[in-house]
Length: 261
Image 1 (cartoon, helix red, strand yellow):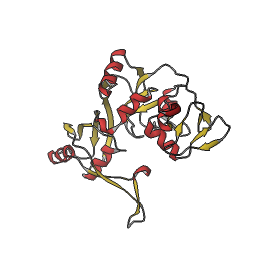
Image 2 (cartoon, helix red, strand yellow; image 1 turned 135 degrees about the vertical axis):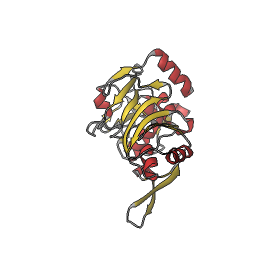
Image 3 (cartoon, one colour; image 1 turned 30 degrees about the vertical axis):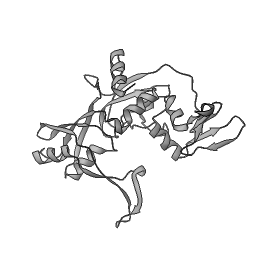
Image 4 (cartoon, one colour; image 1 turned 90 degrees about the horizontal axis):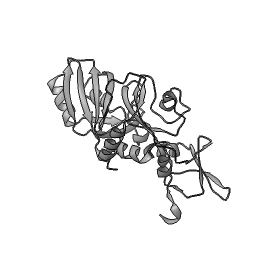
C-alpha cells in the first residue's frame, strides 16, 4: 500500500492485541486514539489507516509493536471468566491467564460456558480462525433442561431462526414492547447427536453470540451447561478446568495449515 499504510484494525490485530473484529469494536467505543508524528491526535474512526510513524493508544496506553515471539496456548476456561480484551472488566480472560503480552483469544465463550479457548498474539491466525466464511469447526457438549428428542435434533441440524439482540446486531427499530429490535438470522446446518437423556454434542461452523443458547431457546429448551471440547484440530483432552498449556509444534503447524497459512 502507498507509504506503508494499512487499515488501523489490521495493525492492531497484527501486534496480537485482538482480532480485527474486536479492534473495530474498540474503535466504535471510542477507546482508540491515533497520535501522528506532527503532534496531532484524534480519536480513531472505523476505516482509519495506520501510517508508519504513528502511535496508537488504547485505553490511554501506547501500543508497542516489538515483534514479540508468537505465543500459542489453550486454556480450559472456567465459568465466570469473561472472554474480552477489555482489561477494565473484572475477571477478563487476559488477566485470568496471567499473561503480560499483548494477546487475544480465538473463539469467544460466554461467561457461563466452559472449555477450550485459544490464546495467541498471532493476529493473522486469529483472524483466519474467527472469520465465519472459513467455516472452521468448533465442538461442544451441551446439557439442557428437557429430554433430547429426535424432533429437537432434526431442527437443530437444519438450522434454527434466532434473533441477535446484542448491541452490534440491532436494526435501529423499536419493537411493540419498547425494546430495540435485533437482527433475525437462520443458523447454518450443523452436526448434532444425542449423548444422554438431556445431553448432546454439536459442531458449529459459525459463532454468533450465545448461538447454542439462542438456538435451544427458540425450540423451547434451556441450556444448563456448555463446554467446548474442540477448535478445529485442537482438542481439550484432559486439560483440567482453569489450566492452560502451550500448543505443540505439531498442533501449531496443523492449525495454520487448516487456517490456510
